[in-house]
Image (cartoon, rainbow, N blue to C red; front, side, top):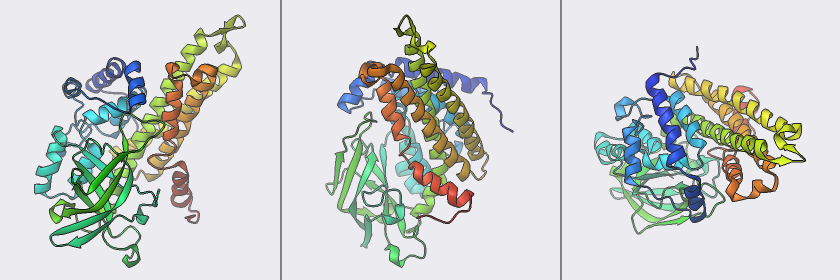
Length: 392
């Protein structure tokens, strides 16, 4: 059975996170980040995260983390999602958890000493590079090749949406080592490397975008980059299998963040609707304003239950594909609907940056695209849950 209560120690962490996003992630600073597309991190902020017990707290104890679990982590991400770029700020001050867990699955002890523990200590920065311009949501179409050469591989290709590539030392890079035509399954023949981003054969360019500018998303080109075999993670050709375990957890956290964005948008809209007086009364007294906000609130509440259920199943080692995908779909829809209602509530001022809801709208819109588009979520549910024929 679900337990919606939180233990006192974790409640303290949630309270700290709420205060952190209020005091350290200020509106004016965020506006500057959005304009300049630069996130400046300070060591004192990192120390605050460590002192609060949230540095690597979400990673399992065997990796040196606090074993927070997915349910608790989802609640934290919902809070962070309410503060514009808090999730990016926090993500840049905490270890690269996704990469750390992937490395832990397939890395040797020697590789863990070189990459995993420096990641957890904050001494090594890493990015993740999988998406390609011609592959979209289908990783089996990857064209970035890693060809055997001597005691390593020669990598050639182009990736997009590689976040943090500008400031990272290494990249967890998914490549094709065996042509798809020679593989029994489409997901075979893909191999992971922890490659250098500082090599002259690597080119990095930030992609201009309409939101999420606290951390640059980059196009990365690999022009004959030599990667030694010692930088390969796990067995050759098994890279995609290492990625599968983290997909459900990722969907849950994205869903939680979408909830946070939606809740923040509603909070702004309700405040404005109570203050804004037109024709002698607050606009919030009008059902045309009140009902869309109330409906958005109800949808967020329902999606929150789906997120908690999916997180609970992940924590208990139960199959969670159906639940994680459902949670991601519902939360993304609810978060965007809430942000859209907030913009409409503000009228023309909803388009003005100083009222902030336009930023929530842009942030919420991304949740319907990343890390997997809503259409692919529906494809999964139609095929794997409803048993309908595969559509792609």
